[in-house]
Length: 185
Image 1 (cartoon, one colour):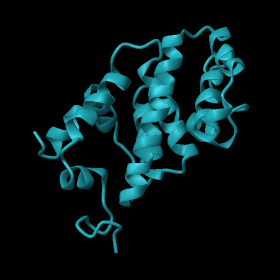
Image 2: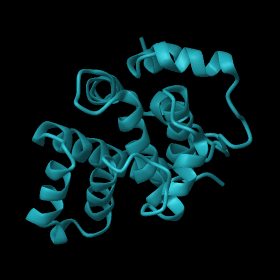
Image 3: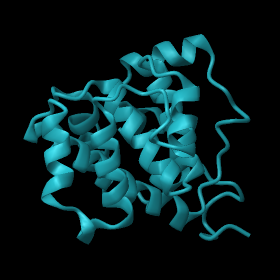
Image 4: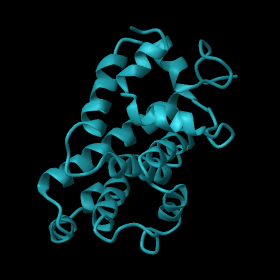
């Protein structure tokens, strides 16, 4: 039996959005503003952070989905898997590692963040805006992971790999388009 009896046995996030549509549009607009608008972090880097945080949270839906999004923007799937296994040895740009360390600590031990954690990000060449955007992405995906897990979403992206056409669509689609795709607009 699903956690929410009104949802299908194996709900997708779209089922949750259709059942509880009131805040979907502003939520997706925030996704677009944060993940697609101008930032010192590339779209690929922000999607990588979304996948990384979701992987750390063991949220298979968001981890799988944002691995695909990161892949659509040029991040190799194996890089994300390696990050979850061991950030320090993962084949990711060294400049990005202080940001990833910061969001990992934010996820696990937010009161333990220190000036040294932020300084490492700045010394790697990132601005305060880049760090703030990374913090927002981490916060958004901690939030989304709780919605996914709390409602019992269980779609398996590994069992439904994207086609090249799907990846191309992802590069041009905005999050707000999801509301239209599921009939909320």
